Length: 161
Image (cartoon, rainbow, N blue to C red; front, side):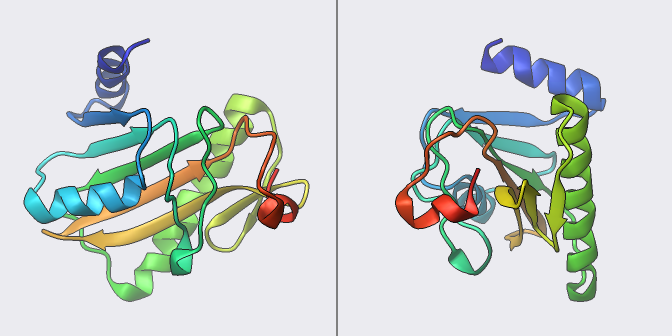
């Protein structure tokens, strides 16, 4: 499938109009999405997706390793959505549970959540979720999943799959 096929399938399956921006390599899908929101007041959702991130980050700006063709690195821009501070944790938890369900359904794997935003397989982190507020009342939802990554840098091998 090419990018147009994927975008058409997403629009058909979600019964919504959304745009897809695909990059072979990008610094960070979340950072790029935040920059987009500063310049554009989105009216419909937008998915920023990359084969590789060179500067992926998680909570507290911790690096998120996302090598070429090693996983799924995606950010969803949800326009005109405000979440009050007390509810952000619940929103992130809901996203974590949806990610767990998708991994179980698609790969028949049983994974665990390290609350509130990390997904683990056999005591090793395989995915992370980062929710941020963007400009113009947009919510930025980043989900990185290391699906096929076999080799990690030495400094993070104990925390990755």
